[in-house]
Length: 85
Image: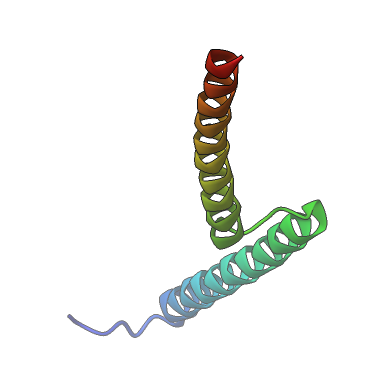
């Protein structure tokens, strides 16, 4: 590329380069602020983590299975009592 001897074009080019840098910096800053606000909002909502949810879900499944087993045992015991009566 040939270099320009025109100071107006040089200044305009420098100005555009600086403006692009400022815009990139502003974008990065806005993303940081929005991310911080979003994280604060989530923290204030008191939501559970995925790990906590999965742990409670596993406990609920185990409790349901145990409840079904106990219901079957109870039904078997009741049927034996009815048969002996």
